[in-house]
Image (cartoon, rainbow, N blue to C red):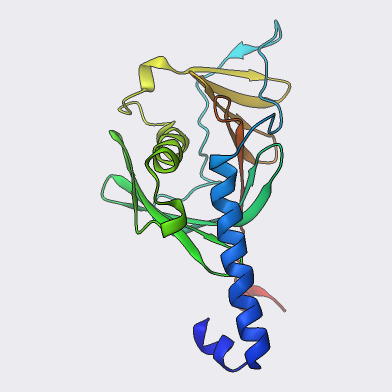
Length: 205
């Protein structure tokens, strides 16, 4: 991407770089200044049915190939769009979060014991930001593992055609179309992931 930017007129190059900086600053603001409500978590009703269904179906996540998702982070005041890439490596999930212009925010590694953030950008390199994000990603990516540290504490049910998983102040909701939403009710954050379908160009006529 850097090579392509250098080929552009100088003004456009610096403008593009400025936009990346602003986008990353807003990305951090999502976690630091999140207040009010970021969408609504699902309240359990009498129609709810206890479930053992998985959040991550084969359609939503491959255990062998790279997985690509469009990610949206929302608070009461901010909505930031980006990309998430994740792949399975010998018992752990490794991935990357970046904005849509290709500027990486951080890498992550998720095991049954927790989540570690690596190569975190300076704007996000604050203990309270990293702790929140790591805990959210741990729940999100390890939710189906029976060996996850929190496995015995989750409550899973189906209601109105959606799968819902509760764990403390966090909740995962899976819509019928496969969209996955994670609500951090304490920090009032909402993560929304939609799978990006890879197109086989050889099959296009």
